[in-house]
Amino acid sequence: MKLVKLIANLGYGSRKDVTAMFREGRITDPQGEVLYADDKVGHDAIRVDGEPLDPPPGMTLMLHKPVGYTCSTKDPGRVIYDLLPPRFRLRSPLLSSVGRLDRDTSGLLLMTDDGALLHRIVSPKAKLAKVYEATLAQDLRGDEGAVFASGTLMLESDTTPLAPAALHVHDARHAALTLTEGRYHQVRRMFAAVGNHVEALHRSRIGGLSLGDLPAGRWRLLDAGDLDILFGANA
Image (cartoon, rainbow, N blue to C red; front, side, top):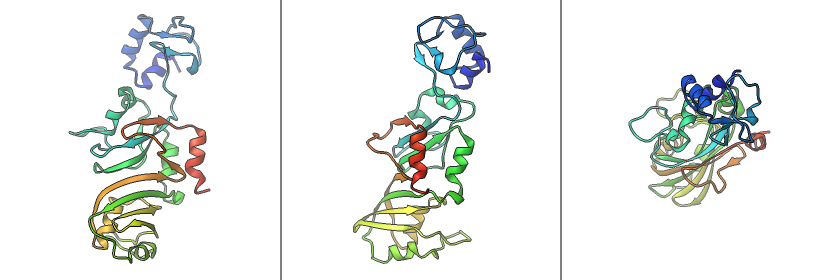
């Protein structure tokens, strides 16, 4: 792939913009020598304004999504792309969220431009466990764990029962719920089905991968080791 197209596809600008960057001497090698658009160099040997290129297609990252952000490219309010470098929104192929967290839910969100990886993560066949920490409006009554684990709970407007889910109670109004599927607003609807209301919701884990000490609103790139951890819990 020619350098202009490569750099444009990573979101640094249109091909016209990137061509101008070459003319201005902003594209260099690691030693600071100016590169030209027809040079043949590897991805790792390219610098833009002295900084290494973003990863090539196949990039995956984790984001600690705060409350108040929408998993969308277009929204009147704040969107998750506002938390990333602006060029990430312009990458081709598109950097997409792996599933969604609603505006009022915080926590671990994965994003990738690798379509095969995205489908591997969200596929029902993967049964990749997701852990949600819920703060409830009312005290738990005591039978919720059995109801959620039964595999017979039917949510309003659904045509099939939910897969069994595991409830771990922290105290009367705080619990962790582990799911292996991802239906629309599932956690909130599950607690509503047993007469409760979720006041706050946070996704703390997907597969074997957790946020660790990543602060709210921050992100980090994932490597092959992280992906091994992600799928390791389901191996």
